[in-house]
Each structure stands twice: as structure tokens, then as C-alpha cells.
Length: 246
Image (cartoon, rainbow, N blue to C red; front, top):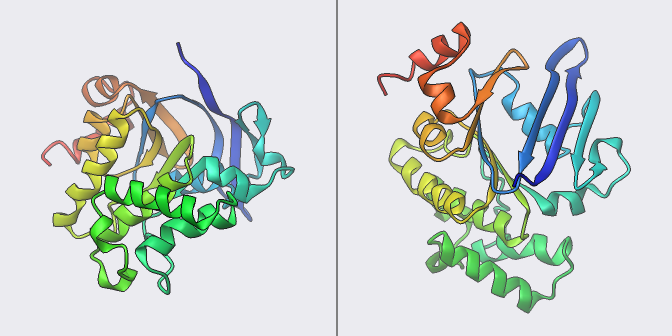
């Protein structure tokens, strides 16, 4: 049975006269792993930033658990604890250790005591293979390690949905795999995930739905099999043709 967690209705976003998202509609069900693909500049990251309220939609609705979070009448930090985000550039606090990075949101937003926050942080750092680095500062870590810490930090907030904004695009090629492996394990455990990605193998093999965007519009969406093996639109075929030999 499909259990909707998030519904996007007629979402649009403009920066002045530049319309970046146009009339976006889709639903995220519990356990979905949805990959959003498309060329750079197609509005993918802006869509995630609107869902996470880092950008204010120009029009439309974002319904989370029957509430329109785009109305401006909700506590944004509290909402973000349920709909977490992993950024392309990690966004770790450079003056804090790995452990502190994974505790600060829990104590500030969830109001957990330090001991409970530490326990959760350790659990998720262990899960992503970063427990040996709890006393390191971000500058001492590789890109792949930073991204795994960022994932642990997001998980420690116990979110219902995790948004990933091109989580591997800032990484050296040899570090991409370690982050994708963590994401694949989360998907297998039933984590609901919305992933903006250029990693077509991940979109094809791990997602249960793929959304293709172009010029701020969802042009086509379906199962990975439908999108990768039998795309209906010429523009989808042309976009995917670039990745065929990868």
C-alpha cells in the first residue's frame, strides 16, 4: 500500500523574472527512493531547496503529513528535522569535531540531552564507517569521509525523508563509491530518499522511481525500467544517450 509522506502540488519558483520551476507535481511515498535526473540548470537542486524550505516557493503547495509547509506558518528548523538534507558541499561546521557535528542539531533542535545525542551520533557514525574519526575536524577528512559524516548527521535527527543534493558531485572519482554504498544500504533498509544525482547507475539500480527534469519542468517520470529502457520522450532519450557508454 502506498503511504504518501510528501505531496508537491503545482510548485513554481521564480527569482525575479527567471522562472526556475514550473508547475511541479509529484508524490513521495514511504520507502520511495526517487532519483531526480536532468542537465545542470534544469531546476533539480532548487526543487530540493524548496522542499527543505531553504527557498520559498513562489506558488504551489508542499504537503507534509497533511500540512502545507509552504504556507510560512510552520517552524522551519523543526520541519527540517523530519525532512533532512545532505548537501553537495557537506556543510559541516569546521570548528567542531565529527562527533560534535553530529550532536549539535540534536541538542539545539530536538532538545536532546548531550548523552542521548552522543549515543545517537555514535550509532550513525558507526553505521557509515566514521566512528574511528569522532575527534577529527572536517579539514582532516577526505571528501568522501566528510560526506559520510554529513549523512550520519542527517540520520541522527531521525528524519522521515532524506534529501540528497548531488551528494557525490564534489568528490574525487575514487571516493564516489564509498558514499553511494552508504546510500544504497539506507535504501535497502527502507529509508525514504529523494536524490538529485548525475550517477545514472545509482538511479537505474537503486531507485524505485526516476524523475527527468528539463528547464524547470518534470518532462517524464516512471520506474527505472521505464525511463532507462523505454523512455517516451525524445528529450529523455537524448539526455540518457550521453550516459549509455558510461
